[in-house]
Image (cartoon, rainbow, N blue to C red; front, side, top):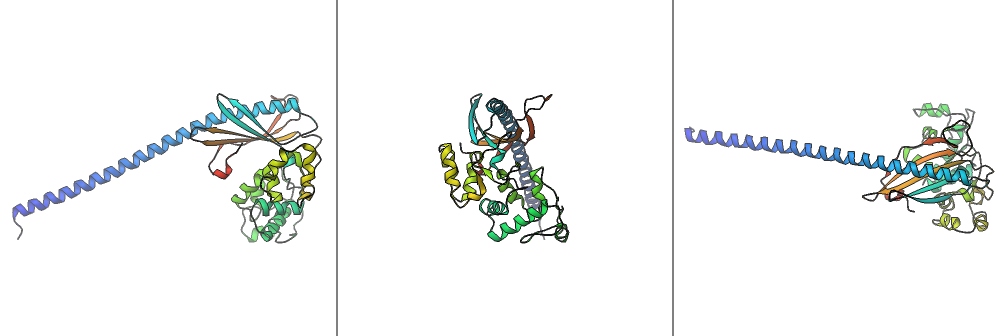
Length: 307
């Protein structure tokens, strides 16, 4: 039989254990609250940093567009301009649309090289994706090429969209192609533009696209830094010669601007816009803003801009 002192001691022990459990539970609640407050503070700080970066990037793109309007002529070329705003260095990458791949008119060989060499697909996978892009755009309902797909194949696969059966006005529609993954689209999207040209203008092409299509890392930068009269000779004599054209477009009106700025903490921010330098009477600016992407942070080291 348990004596009264033992009962009291046992009761006090149970009470102590209960108190300890309560203290531990309250500690966890406090820690969780503190963690949530820290995350909210960090998120608010990043949002403020993004807004500040965005104002700088927008100003840089506006100034770059004004300069392009002044310099506008029959020739267009790829370039990187460096500017300073409020003590921050901003780099603006200018890419004429003629230096990119237009999937509406590009040859099958060029599309397959883009998917294989830039996108990292195997030769067979690249051929299938090329056929599906063609089928997505062409007006008929008959699958073509290797692994092509029209409406029937989309329905059978339970795909959430159907072929457009027409030329693309918005390149993001490529996300709807059967088998296109978000990762693959993100890789090839920087190399795409709408220009109505089957080949890529050498002087307008970004170095990264030249490197990808030729399989020679660093070649694009060497070509951009070489005299204009020597550039065509390098690319037009190589294995990727059929993808490039030494000719420059007569207009060169449509440009892609990508502005980059590095903020505290070694973080990079990017803003992208497409502009048409053709005059628009009655507009608020001498040029037309075709599209403007949200400012985004570059998280992966391989995505960081290296001026």
